[in-house]
Image (cartoon, rainbow, N blue to C red; front, side, top):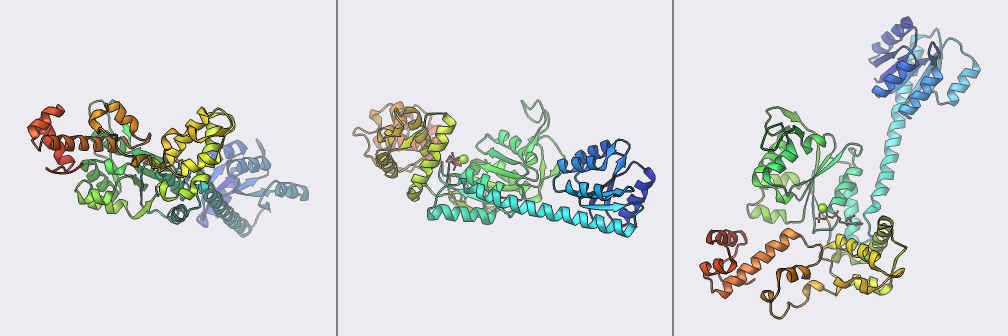
Length: 469
Ligand SMILES: Nc1ncnc2c1ncn2[C@@H]1O[C@H](COP(=O)(O)OP(=O)(O)OP(=O)(O)O)[C@@H](O)[C@H]1O
Ligand SMILES: [Mg+2]
């Protein structure tokens, strides 16, 4: 069974062809000439074409050309009353699959149609396999020969062809998004969309982002909008920073994942969705589950296949290769003159801890490419990379002696802002509590916040009396 385009300008002959092919349960579309055939080829995808040779608006060879252009895998069978050796040779040379003379014997026609359909499918399957191989090589863009990176690549290769939901966990800048893209690219959904959504949105915005909304669903919704579930239909949906979802959004997401139906905000119509889900987070989701901040049932739905991207300090041996790649990309993207890293500067980088991982490395290299005077990049182009920069002793007079700007400037460039601010807030409150001997009213006054605000923050950061920062 296949989908066949029949091209002939004689209605009577088309009818005979149609009834023969339909008896064998093929799906048939008919065209009365070359132009008609072009239109049909643009509109549908076929498994085979059977075309007459001489028609009022052109030749079978024109149909062959149009078919090849529409889909290079398509098999074309010629049908003609003027069988000459030359025409047969010419059409075969141009890629025709078979040649049948009129008047035809139905069995011969049907056998030829079936073989044409089979050939198209084989060629397609072959092409698909070849594409997969090419694409897998393309994923070598995840660079590194260290054991953790090789393992990661193996896991990607294993999980990509499946439909399984993947949860990617890893510190900031370790390549979570890169991994998500590689999985999509190597999946059977590769030619469908990959849609990414960041879950660190406010509740209503996130829900409208995920599920879409109808006009007037909430203040400011002046137009109906499809959500990412609809946009990613038949493709892949990448939920970035998944841990940041509110509990309400988690509940709604779980429902969509359970019954495969999405309903836009403000609508009652449920639409079926078919998406492959990949989620990423730099947080410990299991811990958040224990803390009651993330739904356990949703966690299990997302973490069907858990993958971890290693921090750069755990695969330092990949640094030279990563540096070479990032340097090449920086020179190309920033259009700077040719650059190369001196041996000492690679040594400096190898000794650095990279709290911001590969993204931080990329930023450092980009900046060095721009700032470097000569072709060779020297260690002084990497000012922040004093060995183990994070573990350097605290400034002598403590936080209190520094302005907020100075504190911020001490932080590595690509520190996760949310975590940084949360840590800072916690330390400041703990310190104030210690100084005020646990007197909360005093602490609230000193820090310029209300008592209820303070007790909320104490709960949020799980600070108890006597806690050390
Ligand atoms: N193994 C790798 N090989 C080459 N480039 C990499 C690799 N890992 C990460 N990168 C690059 O590092 C940068 C950060 O990667 P990515 O955005 O995927 O990180 P992330 O884990 O999603 O970070 P965040 O949690 O901050 O969103 C990107 O420019 C990416 O191309
Ligand atoms: Mg990311």
